[in-house]
Amino acid sequence: MEVILLQDVARLGSKDDIITVKSGHGRNYLIPQKMAVIATESAKKVLAENTRQRAHKEAKLKDIALAVAEKLKAVQLVIGAKTSSTGKIFGSVNTIMLAEAINAKGFEIDRKQIMISDDSVKEIGNYTAKIKLHREVIVELPFEVVSE
Image (cartoon, rainbow, N blue to C red):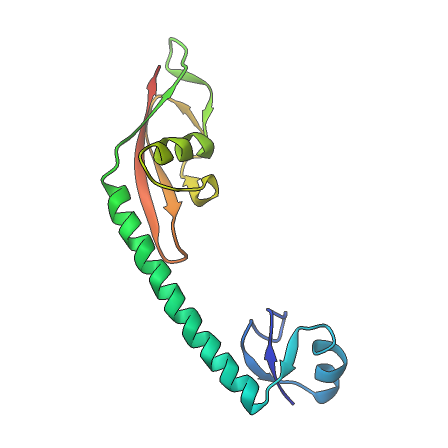
């Protein structure tokens, strides 16, 4: 029996795959659990159309992410932090502070999209953060931590 998976299923396949399973497994488990539908001709046509539309939307999102990435490369970020006389920061610079600094420059970046390459930024200096704008578009953004 051929079925189209509606979600990722361990040891069978990922979403939108057309797979062949034993009819008992398909009818008694996959279909009632809403993990799959029977792969009829009309269901295959709908799947092909949805895949085509999703690819078109993904291409648009990727183009937008690439445009934002080009603009982000020109940004110079300076983060101010309270420090001791030895140059150690009270606390640390985190993704929330980076997101606020980037958003102040006119971008809309969520803190969840930012990954700081070093474990924690606890001293004055230059660092690099990675910003994931899209699945395939990741920008490295250098930033400087200075004393306030």
